[in-house]
Image (cartoon, rainbow, N blue to C red; front, side, top):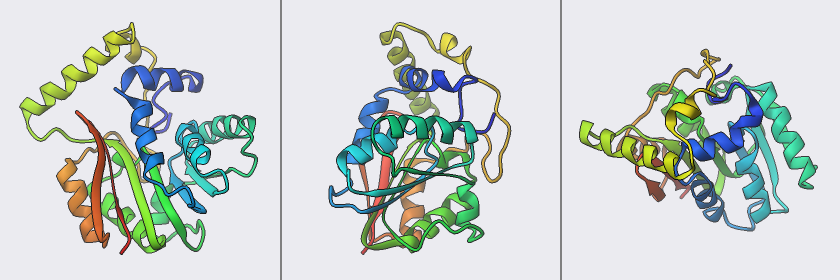
Length: 233
């Protein structure tokens, strides 16, 4: 298994991630709302099973979306889902976006928006900054970048609070963290990605500022999960 695949059986992902992460759909909906409906060209980094792609294309049906993931089974799963929903122009590329961050991979000239969910936290902090800089370089004037990811608790006290919120959420879904984790597979490093390498929300915003985003923002946060990003110009 590659980092980010989470579940040993890909078919378990869409249900399992909603049990594991509080307000998963609300988090992805926040990214979709933050994209202008007139957005034409979109790059998605780490598309997984295509859930974010689906929400984005519902909001921006005329957009051209290029999705990247290093997992062939995720690309295949997402492609079937998107094509079944009528988005035949959805393009999935099997590649490591870390290569793109290091200018060793071409994905297109420029984009109106870049999006990602539950993928960038697998990079080292050095690679996160490189990726944010590459994203900034690739965006057209007025472009936007939004990322949904778990964040590093700011203190042991906050870690306990975040953990309690997650445990309570799973109980509300009629399961437990232990039951969900029984379905989680063991992943191995792949390319530039490894095990969770979380950063605080403050650190992410600082990296975005260093990368050259004119405005950085946090449109959504729920305990240890956040949507953050920035605007060009």
